[in-house]
Image 1 (tube, rainbow, N blue to C red):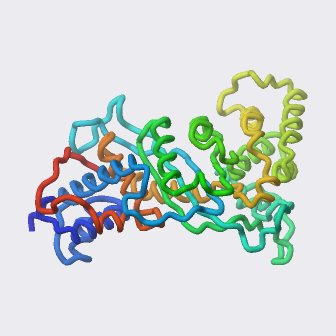
Image 2 (cartoon, rainbow, N blue to C red):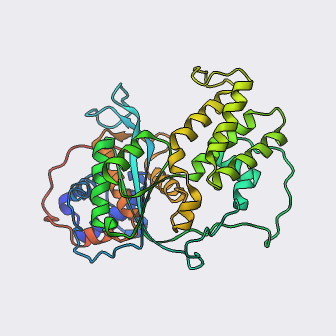
Image 3 (cartoon, one colour):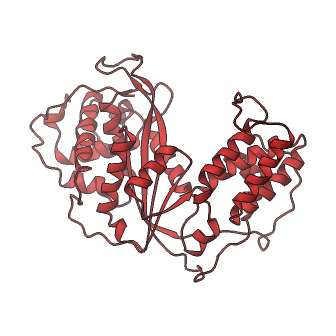
Length: 396
């Protein structure tokens, strides 16, 4: 059947768009329509539908209110997070095939998570629910995985179930997502609109979690200044671990220093870590303002001092835990991986920017837990038998 966009019924459109939001290529979606829907929807039609619906969803981002009219519940705890990703794009206007130029190649995506949360049932009032460093953050295999470094060969005491320290932060009720190729300034406005639609500013407790990227905190400062700014503890681990290991020739000594430093960070004593790192550098005759190459063994020390100093005001973790706020953007990191599953891969190139923008909006809507993609497709305006105006797009 030679379906094109004018011949696709609303129900078939709905099915194809759901498939294209989850399956990694348009060609595979074509095959899936044969096996799942028992009729072939050609790759070219799949591509057109993805672009049409994706860009329609992008237009909906401009609205200050939910398009479906559903009632929105004010969160007890509202948490906004953002981070960047990377996708490969091809030169605009050149059609299918790999066309690279100065305007193409690897491009940054902007991604944001909005979580409605509630306090953990075991959260004590006005008390730190977990003053001790959680076991997972002093387990060498786990920490090395976080830092993306080899596992240090160190002796660790065996941990029984009773010995393990587990941090139980607030619980997520519902998450929505936003993803785009937009600039950081425009993406900040997109984040603000999503927060307004979710009534986040009305929440009694609000937090904004990010890593050390400057654009994250520019967005916070301009659009979320009433939210408590929190540096993701996981990112702090990366810098502290690499610095501690760089201070010692023996891995066992470096590991002991890491555990000491990260325990201080968990306890809110970041200033002591910075002081000790600076003292070590002075003894080594290392000038902090000196620019070191990436392969210099002292580079992790410089990086850690800079990172911790720049973010010290956002590292009062005991206070955040007492207030029932999260201290990690792990859900944000998970969201990035889920978005990347659809848009990033070997031999996967996107039109820059139309094709990439459309699929990012589709994927974010599919990952949102408020059924926004299904709701939109169920009440999508327009005439299914009239071809919509489209621009050619190509993607893997």
